[in-house]
Image 1 (cartoon, rainbow, N blue to C red):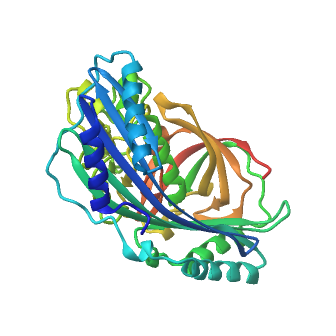
Image 2: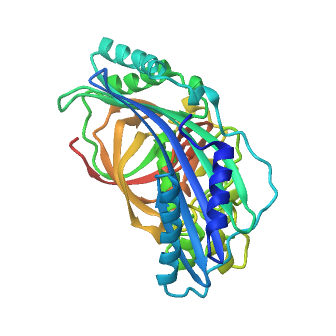
Image 3: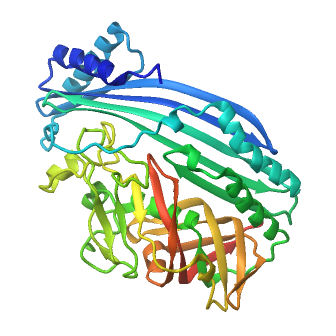
Length: 451
């Protein structure tokens, strides 16, 4: 923490760069990270790493041209050079008639996204979290691997139109894969993210993964086809992340690649499914503003099964004559805005009841090697992993070999039969995702994996 800028340090740096800039408009973004990671494999810690870094990013607008330059050298000479490089880059760019002005200041309340316990977490504390997982795995005849990670991020935004924002954000994550060798060996997975690392129950995660590993020994082959399934929170969370990638951002909608094209206001899936992006949710990993200094807003993406909207940054909002929703990424942000605090509303089904009513189906813990097949139809392919089981006569019975799925997410969600009553916070892309488990009446499996 001592190596990051702090609010006063950021304000002084930003004032210096803004005063020195000859651009028509200038933006200064500082992103500081203080991260630490404890990795373990073969039921023992093998690596402990820590990194502190501050990146300063300058965006210069000259007329209808823009340029961006970055540095992590905070000396006066380096800061002068990064400003000059941004100006030079802007002067060399072709004119962009659609280039909007930088955002101005907007009133908003700050949210509490920093946790001192996570920031102060020591290597010894992380080792104590890893220890019960490894001990339990050894006692059960398995090997545990995984990682325990903490990160404090400092974000400062200032621009020549009067924006000045600064905050600290925290996050932590613990995940483990428990496995044994051999073709018939079992494997299990468990993960949790949290604002406060002290709220993660490491022993419970270890027991969860080991239970899956024990029960997945000696998996039987199941032929590909359409099956009713229960998808755990890990699998549902992965689907949510890929939906965000394929079409919850305004740029994908504007370019015609989003599955929401022509479908906002129309039924997408079962009416029990509602998805939002909500960086101000205290149950997640809160953040007050985006990388343009715009206050983050809750955005309903799917509301009771109906396409509700997408997230915007300044550029995509100007194109549609709207206001940014506070989802801008660091410039130049060629991907466009991105929702990084996804939440799916839970249902009312107890976890113990999710398999009930399925005569023959599959229970899926998580997905791996997921890829996009067709973004405008939200079609994904990937493999099941670390805990795939047969469901027979409403009971989880035998372990099944991993299968490849290829299916449209929204098509599958249209066959929702039950939605779990609880959710789990999981690691996301630049944030977190909170998801429940679900039971689907049909999910398409197209191949069998031997691993």
